[in-house]
Amino acid sequence: MTEQQPARALDLGELRAALAEAQAPWEMAATSMTVLSEDERRLRLGVPITPGLTPDQLEEGREEAAAQARVGAAGAPASFDLRNVNGANYTTPVKDQGSCGSCVAFGTVGSMEHVARFTRGTPALPLDLSEAQLFYCHGRAAGATCGTGWWPDQALNACRDKGITFEDYYPYTAGDQNCTGLNADWPNRLATVTSWTSLTNDAAAMKQHIATYGSATACLDVYQDFFSYRSGIYTHVTGSYAGGHCVTLIGYDDSQGCWIAKNSWNTGWGDAGFFRIAYGQCRIESYQACGVVGVNLRAWLPNQTIAGLWSNEYDANVYAYGSLRGWLKLDGSTSVTAGAMLADLAAAKAGNRQVGLFEDSGVVKQIYAW
Image (cartoon, rainbow, N blue to C red):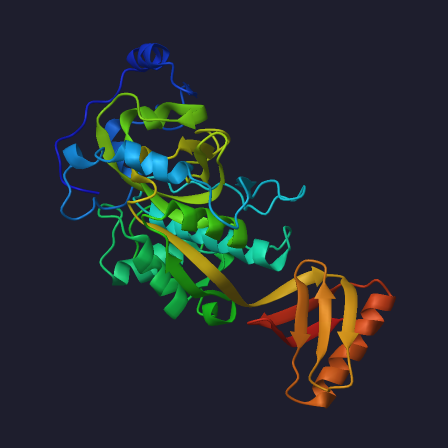
């Protein structure tokens, strides 16, 4: 966010008339954001303005950016929507950042959750990560507050270097906190980014990444009319600049010329919390875009059934397929350990009994079975 004169809230009647006159491809409505005051709306943003730019310069180059984004990406499909990949929905639920400029935490965590599910082929993976730890612990250590916001690249570095715990180990509430409420056992219930890549100013790379890994994180400029978005493909029509915002990209559609994204303003805004935005709009390709390449987990994943087991003549090659998690390698530090795990899981499979698996970066370190 940036210091500037308070913007005048947009009159909904004026917006309705402006949309009709412009024949805009989106519809407005009273939303969870329009019922708030102007100060409350702006507090639900949270990305600083790009250094060296003024609000008056933000719309420069829009048509060129749109033209570049409309070019198909080699090796990527013409459209992708994480909510329907061969009939499976890999997204996690829309959340609400509340009265805090913590959108970067939500845009980053959403991408991590989606990538973890999509790359494992497990749409039901029970993964709900802690935006609170990311923003109030890692972000606060970097100087981020509800009033200043943060940057996705810094958030991703923290998720790579330190990791974040699950929501139940630090539930999110809006408002600056000194890393209070974090469960001391959080290193044993942890998700870490293996690596991430910058996608800024490269629409083709953004499409390739989303189609390959399932999701990306992106920033965009928010104008007053965006708060009233209900459905369709958003284009900025009227209203002054409000601030920078971070969202989770979940897809794109070249035939419609738009990106598909998940927001963090609850389901009372937009299309149940999701939105489409036209290529080239609001610097969504050039503000800051980042892609998570992989996510490691260290946590108990309980209440699974074993759908398959695999091994060969090598002692270390023993794998189990958990119903929620997919294939995991059993700890092969000793053949005795792996063999004992295999026997217990085989018995649970035969009896159709649920098991718990403690995963650490793709390897099962502990199990419990009945």
